[in-house]
Length: 343
Image (cartoon, rainbow, N blue to C red; front, side):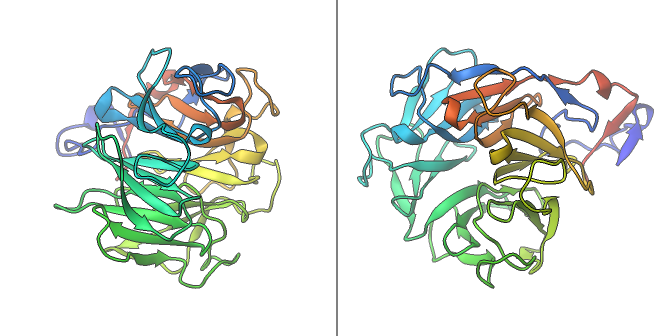
């Protein structure tokens, strides 16, 4: 909902529990990216990455990047402005020991800096506390792919885990206790709106609605929550028009994030681009990449994940270029006399 700035009193605009992300509907991003991490070829040196997968921008740590360095079996923290990273999990060779990771894919980070890491090869979720030298297996025997933390509800916070093989999403206590509750995907893999197919990195909003990229269905679906019960049928919020490169299509969707106005952003893997889908839109707009597969700063090469910092700058995990790219936000069009809020 939008209000003139003259009406933005404390009654109309009460204090936010989450800082406003500053992304208005008319915001744009630089077409030329800047390499923030990696970009020095594939390798294991601390100024290198090897097929970066998941990405998290930590607002509680100066917008430091938490990068899943898939090929090196480690999680790297990369401070803003740094020329190299520091290993904060793994990095002890590929394996299944508690101090090792095997082809980690995605990561969620809580407000205390605890990492929740998915390992597809080891079929587990590894919880790694800040400063620890080893992790703790809290979920096992699941071909885990995507992972997200839900909102804090009283004293509770839940983990949502994507089971790639069984095409479902499970909800766990953050401590990993219990067997998990299937909240999406009770009908098995498929193409109907009651089913999933190859779910990847999801987004959970403040109402606990789940946005799911489905790689082989070439779509992003939204599963609406009502008192912690999710709809059994989804709505399509991006793609769903077959595999392709038109603006109403996607080609292998790997990750999604959603801003506070409900706009959806998709890592369009096969089209080497990031697309933006406004609420109710039938097609998206390209905000990064889309200039063919390559290593120029106007190009991407298989984007695997995306994230925003507190100012709305966009970060992309540029998998096959072994780098993280940042696309600066331009808010000059946001000064039109209206403030748009997500309700």
